[in-house]
Length: 148
Image 1 (cartoon, rainbow, N blue to C red):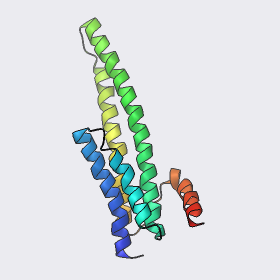
Image 2: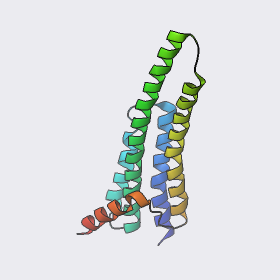
Image 3: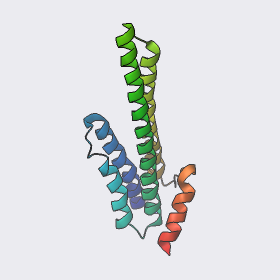
Image 4: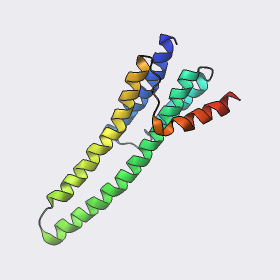
């Protein structure tokens, strides 16, 4: 494995992580498109290189999982926020439990996003084939079908 492969594969994780951070800061609707496009571009550009294709697919699936977690977290957040506002308006007092639940959802979402991409970036930059157990078999089946 060449050093060039490590840098290219790790840049996939880094670019998605940076675009997710921009999404959190800027909060525009078009930014989630970028994390979907980056792995696809790397997948098409380096389709002959198994290492880069594997990490492109893994980053894509990881982002899709994170997208589902974010959608679920957003729905729960707004349901709790609505309950909190309703509770506050009707009782004229605040609930520390609801505030802590809303804050915990935000912190959990942040860690769910950042940690897998940092671990992936660090592992790949040193040449370790970082494989996420839950999606590894799916990716390997896709790679077998791509090689046919």
